[in-house]
Length: 536
Ligand code: MG
Ligand code: ZN
Image (cartoon, rainbow, N blue to C red; front, side, top):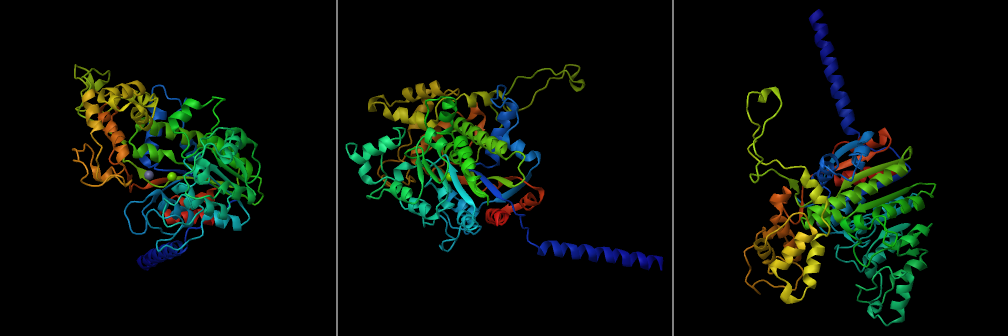
């Protein structure tokens, strides 16, 4: 009898457990509702890029993060962490357009699509949904507003390259604030004529703070259409800070300043281009006036650009720009119960990592510990990397891209390996030799170059130092090769010039019930749906 009772009790417990499991599985995780959602996307900010920020904050001898605490540490104080897979409908790896589409719509997309599902049907995005709910909406990016990530949150196009039609989509969707670069895609072709009245009028409107040029091949003036739709226009920091309502802010002809330039301009009153942090704070100020709440997407978009070029110093400054922006958003949200903050990436870029090597192995030395008493020397077999390298990475004065811009401006007969050596050694702490510069410059005929003005077999293809198949942007191959030249001294390896499939982090901060569904292994379509659910 005793035994039988025990048996039935155990049976009861098992069936109860089974019952509760089935019940839990059949209920899909639904995020609780919040008034405001802020999604911050680090483009290309995989776990490796997050790792660079954390290594720098914690280990750099002279870290500019005096507290050694990053904004991501703050996210985790009362936040939750999930991870998310980023692949598209039919591919292993994603690009930014498909990834942002999946986040913005919760539907699988195809590579390089903007706001369409995998079959090519336009799908309602979170901006459109939030507007129907009566919420205010905003897009902020330090790239340009027509670029893949912001575009996929508010446009519907078959390919990300359609940047001349994306502005019309953006206006049709009508987010209340759009702050970024990319003015050239909004101006009629005639603006290129410096003598025209239009050119002069635009120069005056922008306070001469942006180069006036058009990337369009037609006479459409999208700025005029924006004004007709009730947008106030802003082109510099002063105009941004006066903005109170529906505002289109275009602060650069194409991409905004890179992270190194932003670091150097910080505190410079004469600098007219706003920072990502300034744009984000102004967006919050405007959007939070809506009593129904808001959805805001902020992109730290040049993390990806630095990583494509394998430019570690620039990448660190991009991560610091992201960190500054997130800190400001966290300060804004402090003590608010009505806001959910989601920080994620669209994918990882470059396959970055610090790595140990067999070069410059530290000399054996004594240690005070008991196990080393009696003369045994501490002698690891490899060079595991000195944290001093982090300060040297921070000290880079010019991006690799800008170093090559300077190089390309030299008269042709001066574009020599020795000149490149001088430039690299002037602006970075990781010196190269003339022999290395010779190899870096032997890149002119990568047959995989996609820009179209170089055909296969036109020149003899020199022996590539990088695996050409994964370094598809030919002009940047010089930068990838420079990265490889300093790899040993930086203690850094890069796997590719494109993206990887590495799952990305999902940091969330808000009310417990709201955060809980995000703390899982997700796919970006699920992350998108959870974000939409949280607002709905
Ligand atoms: Mg992007
Ligand atoms: Zn990319």
